Image 1: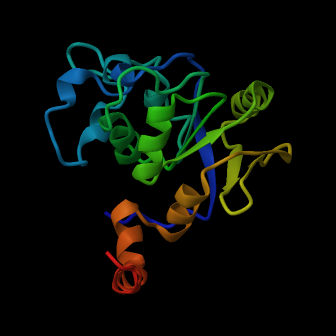
Image 2 (image 1 turned 180 degrees about the horizontal axis):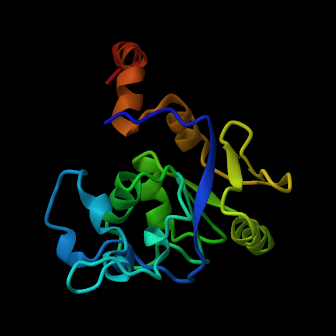
Length: 198
């Protein structure tokens, strides 16, 4: 399944400064029955977002109209716990195209990269700068430049670089998942197979 190309994303952000957010908090296990990737966004952070009677919890950030955007800024150790792909699906389906944190669980990070969500790992100090900028002004935008591997706080021009696996970077720049990548090089694969003795 191809995704939109990710080149430069400029967006306001939703702050969630909670550490050790695990995948069961991102998408509770009772919602894992579906196998298609649609519909999970409605249940992103379900137990934090809604009361038992399904009414929104007013004090949860996703229910606060002040904070909107395609970037979710999480606390340290975001995406820990079980390896469920559904957590990344829920983040994507809710409209986020980037998650920023000072540390990600590896499996969650890779699951995000596989579904078109860019995980941007920053230093603890820069993460604090981001939270401060958002709380000072909710209209502050973050600028994520994937080609340059940089993240900039628009209101302060403070910038930091981030690391990403080059294969995943090229896939995101082209809007490819792993299958799209193989389809794109199928002629190279055919030529290699024809010229490689068994």
